[in-house]
Image (cartoon, rainbow, N blue to C red; front, side, top):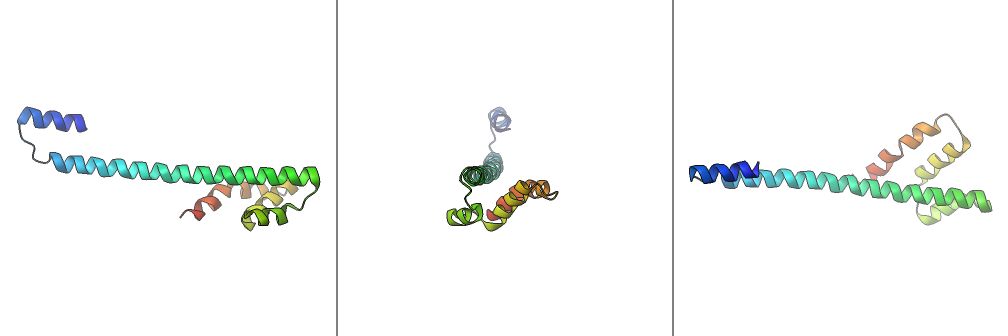
Length: 110
């Protein structure tokens, strides 16, 4: 699009509208970049919490540590601990809760 606009200016020797078009393209690109950055931030937060929950689970299985208490000490939100606990117990609602984990984390970022 930018190249076509530049070619039009060159061919017609008239730059009317070129600046506006470049500004619009810049705004669209910035919106795309901001959306991607938000998605990346959510993905990184999901991965961090996933790794924390996996570590808590491993400690709980290896040493018999109360993962709820340890998770609270680490700052893991209580609703995520209960999701992990339901998933570990094999309840039927556990899978649905795990699938909702991303939306829970996403809500932390707006």
